[in-house]
Structures are given as structure tokens and as C-alpha cells.
Image (cartoon, rainbow, N blue to C red; front, side, top):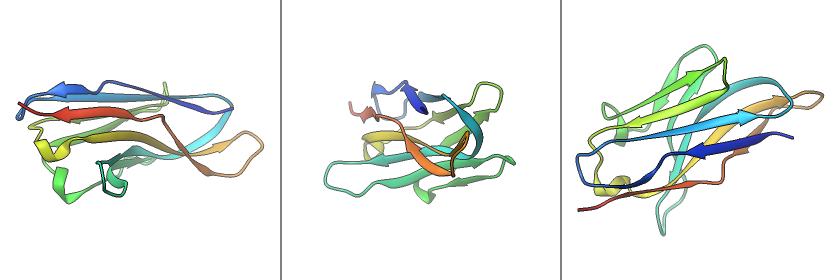
Length: 120
């Protein structure tokens, strides 16, 4: 069984910073992409940032230059450093990983979500 456990998030003032982390555990053969999505009230879930096994990254235009995604292959951890946060960054943030479990095919796995609120 594969699990994604998120940590971080919370309430921060505009211009502040937060760091999210997500640890993947379980019977894993390989992990391709790892990253973060977010969903604000009344909106669809959207990609925030992804990092692939080779190190390439992909960011939403709205977070470029403010957010940085990183990955630790040894611990199967993906992190999102969020700087200069804005009220429009308020959302539930979900960890995502494209995992091939042992004896299985590659599928998308999701964390439970963590709330990020940017407000003064």
C-alpha cells in the first residue's frame, strides 16, 4: 500500500513564507513525477509545481519566481517552498506522485490535502 503524508501549511500574512513537505511510503518500485496541486473554494484543482525524476520542473505561471519545488530521492520526499505569498494563493494544497508500485502499473497517488491561508 502506498501512502502520501503531507505536513506544513497554515495561516500566514501576505508576503510571508511557508514550506510544505510530502513523504511517500509503501511498496514502491519507482516514482516518476512528484509535485503539488491546489484547489481554492469554487475553483477546479490546478497544478502548482512538479519535479520529475530527472530533475526537470514545471511551474504554474502564477507562482513562478515565488515557489520552489524540490525532491529528495533518498527519502521519497517532495517539498514546496512558498515565498511572497499572496491572498490568491489561499487553497487546499495536495501532494501528487506518479508511482509504480511493486507488481503494479504507474498511477497517480494523492495526499489528503493541507490548508494554506494567506490573510492579514
